[in-house]
Image 1: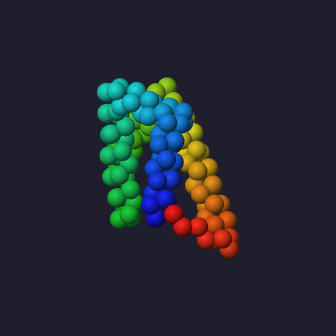
Image 2 (image 1 turned 90 degrees about the vertical axis):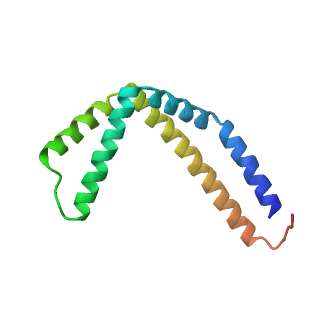
Amino acid sequence: MEAIEQHAEELGRLVGQSEAYLAWRRAEERLTADDELRQSLDRLAQLQMAAAERAEKGEETPPEQQSELDALWSRVQVSPLYQAYIAARTNFDKLMYKVNETILQGMKKGSESRIITLG
């Protein structure tokens, strides 16, 4: 188990040093540094949660809240900071998908191998 943990730590270090991760973190920092955009995102999240809770109860979102939600979403989507964040996050997600797929392939090969390695 110790070898697995060591390799996992090394993988984490490499991912943390990857351009995809670093670009995502920089985009996130720029996004959160913009007070107006951050407040809009916070309010948008509140409205979306309230709408989801209402939908679970079979209720509709009041028109004034739906209008506010639509207006905020339109404003956020055109923000260059938000667009850069989404692009960076998407690239990081792609990297992590590839990493997970590679791990799964390695697990499959390992489980099919007759050679048992300890360590």
